[in-house]
Amino acid sequence: MAQDRLGPIATWHMTPAQQAAAQAIIDGPRGAVYGPFVPLLRSPELMGHAQRMGEYLRYRSAIGTKLSELAILVTARQWDQQVEWAIHAPIAAQSGISAAAIEAVAHGRRPDGMTDEEAAVHDFSLELNRDKRVSDPSYARALALFGERGVVDLMAINGYYTFLAMVMNAAQTAAPEPPAASMPER
Image (cartoon, rainbow, N blue to C red; front, top):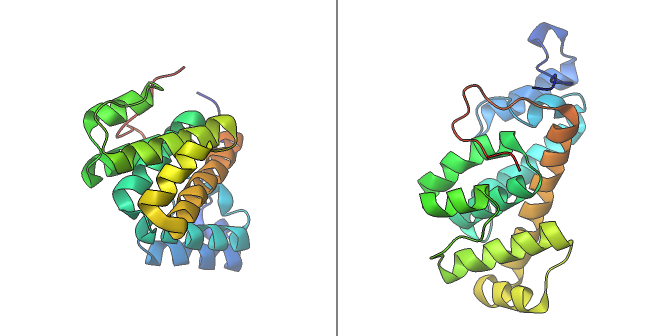
């Protein structure tokens, strides 16, 4: 296992700006500083903006929690991001994504038996991450199901969790021990 490059900062070593940024996360729906917010704490203003965007996308997006969590899992798989996976696979299951679908995404396969909405989110997210664009048919299907606001939120979920994956991959952020869920290595 690689060394965590930007691990937790002891409270007594934090600057006042870091303490305020950490407290804002603790006081919010997350309740603690963990995962990507550990390395992001080195840039408290950036962390504050990022956590507010993430709070909207995770808890209030136009496509809802269940579909947001599916998009997060597709992004985590595409970026081989174990921390995102460990945090979000259990949430996806609690939100109604089937164990079989979670397992398929973990292995890089398209899940069988998805609803129309799940298939639209999966395919849109996979194309955006893998191909760096979305095909006309996938875009049209998402637009018909979720409207423009939903499509924009879906794009933003993919972008935001790609940003977090990049931060954690570069920082070599360690997954929780023991992880609640993990992806197989490719």
